[in-house]
Length: 539
Image (cartoon, rainbow, N blue to C red; front, side):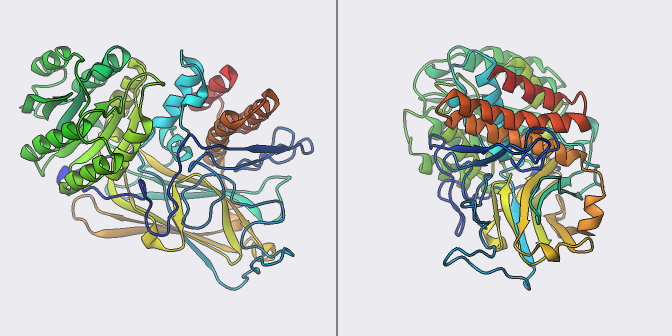
């Protein structure tokens, strides 16, 4: 989740989404097809879904991409899947295959990593609801693996104010090929209380078009009421509604504390009717947010909609460009999706919020509204440090073959930095492999550097951790085991969606379940792991 300490120092940047940054592959449509191939291994072998597992029957699954979600990737790709093109060896490794590149045993590897915005977490909620509620099929849910790492919690140490803690961990499990490892990097922020946060200035931009009738409007109101309950005396809030026309219900209203009566009255008055001019609604919202902008506050535009756009400008790129340009003054967007699976336009909402440096959230129940805007109020609406970019330095011969984030590259200009919330962590889970395993000795170095901007001064700082393979292999890997479970769960859902028969579906679920069982041995009773297990049980 992404947040900020001082709203006046936030700014919106255009991400690789929509068309992709130069050198980055752009994500494909979620309607694309994926395939899952499985090979049974020996009992106690590795679970090759991004981690070598100590349970299960050595199930090795290669997942090809579902559109842009997974599939073959290279440096600079937005991908979470297996980047090995086939069983002859990883890209960049020595191979007898004609034309394959030779193994570089002399040049150290330097990679730059990025998640999607660290507060984007819509797809795991949609996937859970698809399996556990009245939704017809999990096929209705998009699966973006990096959002699962944003949504589920990791217990990394808290940083000092305006800084981060870098925590790498590494495993090589029995049954994994020589020279192959699972590496996880946690970048954690400071921990703050609600009393320590700066005052807020929120503009709620609310879709009241006819398509919002029913569940969507109920969830819009539940989100607004939960936000209202967590405001403090002195916070400011504005309400703009939009359908075919725009109406300002509140403009820069200063609340007298939680559950401000005037704010609740405005929320209760909302109803659905008319067409859906999303472009006009965004413009009106940004105009009002700009008028009441306060550099000493957290300035946020919260767009709540089912993602429809049938009146006015409906072209995705034009709407996204408007969000980008309007967001350039330090007003950061949070996009909140609501509605039924068959009606919710995930792609449009994701692209609009992505282009405006925004977070994409989905609210499916009152409990979820409480989770995001109650329990996670600070991490949903604040920022601890800005423009975080992570550099990973490995010995010669290494490459990433599976990756949980949205993009990585050897060229830092191709990887967009991201904001990091307080009470939160960015988590990068990857499988790495080397064509020169003899170089991966216990004293072989691994260096992780996090560069970021101070949230107030704007100065660039960095935290650098220098360690070795031996040190990491001997250290605690509890959070890595949970990351492996999250990775296998997301990839398993993709494979389940793509499966053409029950046997393939069962294999996808088994792969994910094995990694969750391994993680539960290290984290018994973990609520996130229990939730993932319940979804697999429903499938």
